[in-house]
Image 1 (spheres, helix red, strand yellow):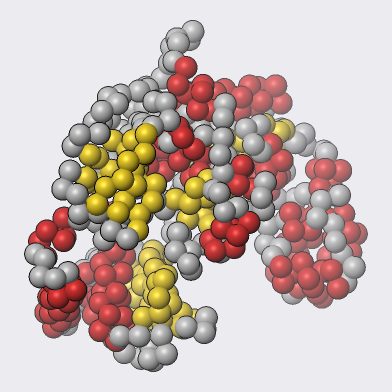
Image 2 (tube, rainbow, N blue to C red; image 1 turned 90 degrees about the vertical axis):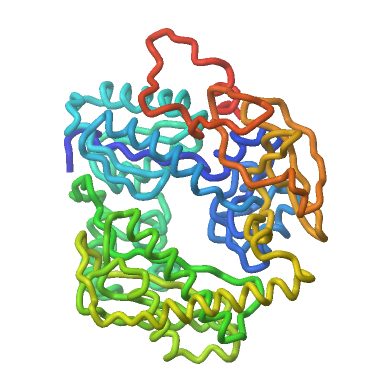
Length: 486
């Protein structure tokens, strides 16, 4: 444990939803829910306005709609979130060489490694300046926790939400943690909490009073001993600059159960290709291919195969995924499929026995899908269909030849409704088009701050350039202030 609160934890406030509100003036101050929009979707992030109605992350979207039917339900735009995240992480790296990202919107920072004096006043000043810099550069807000340990810094940032800063002085840990529910501690999920409740343990203080021996008896040696240390406020984990990923995977949940074996196979091939794209984007390869199949009755199966060596060859990974699929009975219906690769490495080893048959079969399946699309579309050209999105998801960026940039507000029965507005404009007007309208096409995210052309697509990034840094006393404009204050 450190004698000064030099570990900082940053957690952006309702990140996905806040980014959507910043990008869409008509949604500011209104409930926004980002996540899967289908009947089997799950909430990724809810704005604070939606949380008032009981909407929470990981909640089924159908339940969220019942609780808050008037919210805007939007599909996620990860390209925007990643761009904003890069700017935030660059601000953190300017504070210290030791930055441990936990997700796009969350990270630990070792301020001591960055040369910040180990005094409360100094670290508080750094935390406050960081919040101002994030607001100026992205138009969004983040909450900051400062403590002498990672566990406490994370608890402090949670207590600071939204848009605040909390410092936990070393020596006050047990007094602070004592009254909190045991679910506050990392690793205590519903099952562990229920085990502790049956033993009469509800708070962190009661957990500490139970003693290490009792917790080990209830939970096992590793979990029990670790939980006892955390209940005492002890956490000597260092901030690790690089957290090595153990696996890379992708998965999709389908609105209607898949019963056609050919369709299931083509989806597995598509997921394998997406997984390879992520592998290569991360500069990694993998040795073990894994598939995940969730059946109509929610039973979930996983199958894995370990290759001779690590690879990022799409043909090898697709072939392995298909072989694994052959061992699973999908006749009852499949609601979710996933493909992943583990045993990651930073080099590849060619598999000379990879067969080209999979590629040929994939091409045949693709041709069959195109033929089916031609039949269902009354003979429409496949090439034209490929240029159009499969569906106009709510929240998606679009461009119209006459009206400029906007976003999809909704679609159905052959029509798509678009609201034409930009992050720096007033709430825009809504117009409706046929889904086949040739003047309407997908767009890219616009800058959240800084302004830009109101009648067309900007080529600027979705946030200020990485090199941007306001000079002391420089006027950064009112747009970012307006966005952040909502």
